Figure 1 (cartoon, rainbow, N blue to C red):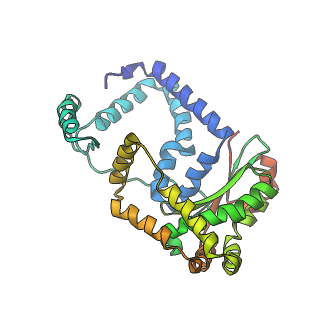
Figure 2: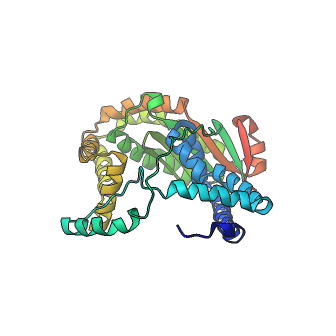
Figure 3: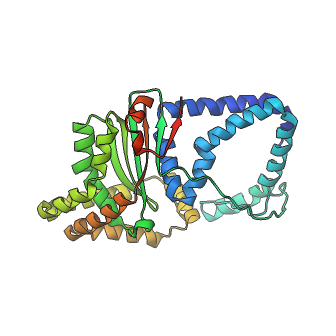
Length: 325
């Protein structure tokens, strides 16, 4: 709150240098950038996150760097306006976890901050954020490749259920790891359900075309799996999924997660329901999810990270190609 914004040329240049260094690392390991762009295609939430943390933000930083050089006074003016809006009591949320005595002490102490903040009101901003291409390639100067496949559950009429986590566990252990990692040579491959998104990815791959075929065959694999899955084997997948969804934690982690769930509107009953859905998973659900996976595969979008030559060899697969070099 006391930063000397007029010295934008000094601290602004250093800050931008730090941001660019972080993105240089992300360009070398770009899976998270691919995740942000793929989920931004289907989700307004992740479109916002991509805009604040992904390649769109990097483009903004490069533009800001030029502005600081050419017109530092105007940049300082804009940042001053932003700070005035950001450090404001109106619409401020403060979350706290602790016993009654700690809560009382916190309420007394926090006024030292909130008492200094203005309580101004501003009109609600309306955002129209850019949507990435459905089939996108990110070109990097490396022979390793990355695949990120995404599909919206709601747009494919797939319910959000703990049963889906059991199915993802099966796909990871019985299909993706054996075919893409052990046979295909990728460092890793996995599928997961994240909020309203079905995600499948490969890490440090060397044949993204083959990996895409494997990921696209998840529905056929589940159809074939139903006939030889036993209750005993299914139980092992249910137990491991249940354990992953309810890990043992310490008091500090419990407090943090309680705040996070509260902020996201996830109740204790919601979490219990998810665990119950995992426990109630049956062999018939495998066939049900084969149908769900068929819809998700039909509606998938993807981001491929590979060398320019590898992308050029399959350029018909892409609607957009972005160079990270």
